[in-house]
Amino acid sequence: MGESVYINGQFVPPSEAKVSVLDRGYLYGDGVFEGIRAYNGRIFRLDQHLERLYRSAKAIVLDIPLTPEEFKDVIIETVRRNELRDCYIRVVVSRGEGDLGLNPMSCHTPPTIVVIASSIALYPEEVYEQGLDLITCTTRRNLPTALNPEIKSLNYLNNILASIEVVRAGAHEGLMLNHLGFVAEATADNLFIVRDGLLKTPPSHTGILEGITRQVVVELAEAMELPLREEQLTVYEVYTADECFLTGTAAEIVPAARCDGRIIGDGKPGPITKRLMASFKEVTVTEGVSVG
Image (tube, rainbow, N blue to C red):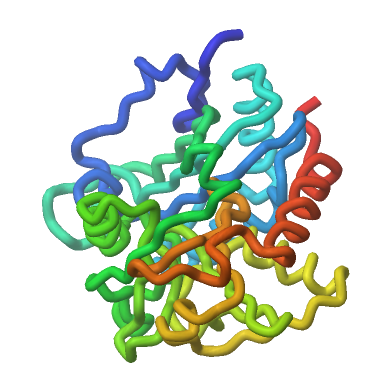
C-alpha cells in the first residue's frame, strides 16, 4: 500500500498530509498526543494509551470527535496500511483552526487528528548493554499547578529546553527536578532506582507523566515479587543507587550507568534491571491488539 498518514478522515501519502498554519497545535501547542509501539503485529497497551489521550484532552477542554473505539480502528488501519509489524505510532489531536488570537473558542474547524506509523530508535543499541550517561538539568519540570505534566500536551518546550542541555553536555539523557529539588523524571522517560533490592520511583504528585511503560514495570515487579515503593527521590539517591533505569514507550527499559560523572552501582546494567528488561520483551511479543 505504501506509506500512509491518517489526517482528518483520510489516508494520504506523508507529502500530502498538510496542517493549516492557523491550526492551534502549530500556533500555540494547543493539543495532546500519544506515542505508541507495535511489536510483532500487535499494538502494545493501545487501550491504556487511548485512555491517557482522552484524559489529557478532557483536562484541556478538548472534545475528540471520535469515540475511543473509532480511534482504535483508525490507529489499527494506519499500521495495517503501512504494512508494519514493529513500529512507533504518533497520535496527535489539536484543537483545530482558529484566528491569531489566544481564545480557543475562536476555532472554526473540528479538532485536527493525525496518526503516523513509522520507525524510531531513541538510543543506540550499545546503550542498552552499557548504560546511559545522565546529567541533572538546570531546567525544572513544569509545576503541576501551572501546566500539569500529567497532561501529555503538544507544548513540550519545557522538555526541549532540558534536552538542549543534554545535547550540549554530550550526555544521553537528563534528569529534571521539580520546584522542590526532588527528581521528577527524565526529559522523555520515567525513572527507577534500585537500592538494597528495593525498587523506587517518584510518585505522580512529584510532577511526572505517569508512563505506560512505567506501569508495566510496576506490574512486572509485582509478578516477580520485587518490592517497589513510590517515594520522592533526591539526586543523591540516584548517585548512590545500586541500579538505575529509565522507562518510556520509545526507550522501553534502558539502564543508566552514570549521572553527573558519578558511576551508578558498578557502572553496568544491574541484575534487577536486566531481569525487568527481559520480562518486558516477553510481554511485548505476547500482549497487544492485533493489526491482522
